[in-house]
Length: 151
Image (cartoon, rainbow, N blue to C red; front, top):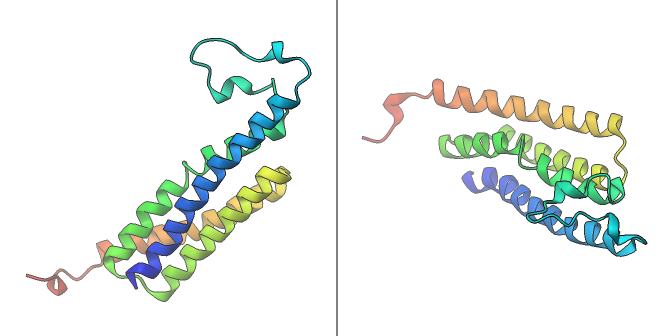
């Protein structure tokens, strides 16, 4: 069942890369549509954040979401790995898929619509699944039977 537990994590990794690729057309498209390109920052070492307030907010939403996919999901990856190593139960796999599905819906909502009440509800629901996974990871390790380990 280790592969079943790691599959949701692998899907979230791939989803994060899809969001990374989404940033390119969103930002470059917004820059291409600008009538006055003199508003673009020209300083050396310019970063994506320098486009905040210069291009339409919607063009920056995928970048904001990409940053979010590198915040809380890091905890998910750790919990998924711990549970996969310790031996996942069907509930663990289900919770992992629920978390990933909610994060994907959260990404789509943030990148396309971005109304905060719905986005926050999706965040809370995914966080609830993650909290249960984290507690189960702690239980799997702290309550492990050392006598059952190989010699």
